[in-house]
Each structure stands twice: as C-alpha cells, then as structure tokens.
Image 1 (cartoon, one colour):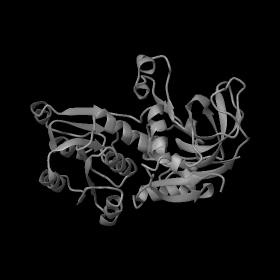
Image 2 (cartoon, one colour):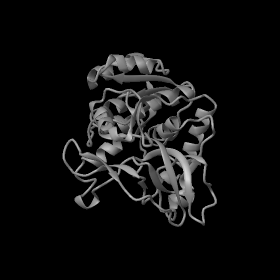
Image 3 (cartoon, one colour):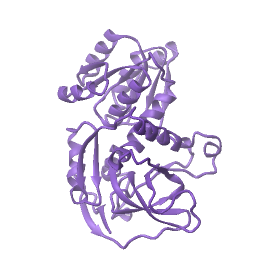
Image 4 (cartoon, helix red, strand yellow):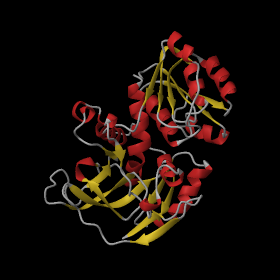
Length: 338
C-alpha cells in the first residue's frame, strides 16, 4: 500500500510517497481502507516543531482525521464489521485514569491522538470507529474529528447557549470556521476576525453575524467592544489574542483556549480575570460522543462541513504547503485511493 511519509526534519518538511506491506489487525484492531483524510495544524506542529518528532520517529506518517471502509477486523472485534462505512475518533486514552472512568474522556491523564491517516490503509482501534450513515460522505466525515469536535467541545465547555455573543479571533481557520458554524447552530450571535477580507466574506455566508477585517489586537478590541459584551471567546490562536479575548468578555464570561498558532506564551492582566469574575478554560479535542453528535448534525442537514480542496495522495506535500500559506477557508483533504 502507499503512504505519504515524512522522511526528514527539513523545513519545509520532505514528504515521500512510499510503498509498504499491507497491514494486519492486532487484537482489538481494524483495517480501514482510507477514502478521505483531513489535514490539521497539529500535523504541521508534528512535522515542524523540534520537540514533537525525533530522528528515530522517521519515516513518519501524519494525519489524525480519516474516514473509509472497514476491510478487516481482529477475531475479537464485534463493534464493526467488514464493509462498514466509518469515521475514526482520533482520541487515544489509557482507559484507567479517573477521567477515562468518570469522563469526559478527552481529559485523560495519558491523552494522545492517532497518527497514520495519510495512507491507503490504516490500522486503528476498532472501538474508536463511528458508523457513518449512507447520506454522510467520506470527505465531509473526515473533516469532523479534530477541527469540528474541538470547536464543539469548546462551545460546550463555555456553556454556550442561544442568544450568546461568541467571539472567534481567526474565524477563517479550521477550528474558527467550525466554531462559527456550530455556534450558529446553537443559536448564538458571532463575531469573527481575519486579515483577509475575501475569506471573511466566505465565513459570512456560513452564518457569521459580525466580521472584523483586522489582525491588530488593539483594533480588534475596539471593534468587538463596539458590537457588545462577549459571552464566550473561542481562542485557537493564543499569543496576543488571548489578552484581547479575555478583555472583551462580559462579567462571568468564558474564554476557551485550544491552540497557540499565533504564540505559545500569552500575556494578560490577571486583575481583569479576577475583578471580572471571568472564566478561562483549556480544552483539547473532544469525546467520541461529540463526534457521533456531529455525524448526526451532518446526516440531518444541520451542518455542512466546509471543504476547501481535495488532493490525491501523491500531492500530500502540496496540500501541506497550502495550509502553511493560510490561503484556504475550510478543510484540506487528501484522497488516498486517488
């Protein structure tokens, strides 16, 4: 089978299409013929950050989001069968810590996430496969597990409800787009920002209530304040946008942070946090139940995942370059069978 593998630590990273033996399932595992696999920023971090991969990890097959068809299962697997249409929940947990026992499972003390989706076939934990209705396509399904599940869990963690005002700096990224769509489904009003005006127009067509064309934190703060006091900030950027996201919150408002694409070490005034009784949460991915709910949203027509472009497996490196350029709105998806 073919895989798209990282073979060096050079920047930009070197991706090669390699042939490997067909895999066999171990106990509790299934083999999935991968029909679609989506790219996420966490894949870039694993490819480019010195603290993520070592020379011993190479060659490395990235990709955490996949959807496809079950081709084979281990003898002890009863949750899925050959021929099932599935999407993978990429969450990997220990199953024994207090959060695995009591929930939510994405708080697992030994949390990890799946890699290996950029391949014609993938070996996965069969219990992490979610069945896909016939009406849900593989490309749409592959868009859901990381970006949409992350955004959905963040909105839930903040207690987002109908009538809330939700602020999403960087609303044209993967998690940003998902947050705008899902907040709209929940009945919330939304504010989104971007430095690229045409990308904002695209997100407006997805339900964005108020668009702000700027990447300057001070301009952003002023523009958001003119719209109203924010109930929830969905922050996947980190860096200087953490301070802005906190300052625009109303008393007892909540900011949820899931990433740091704009900076790993944010600064803010702690007085604003405690005098404003504001709530600050961290959040990583979500639960398998969250993914099941989102599949249901797509099945019933409530959610239409945004797909920017599709690529054959041989053009995985070009897909990664496209994400690095930040020109796309929506998910970039590789089709390994092409």
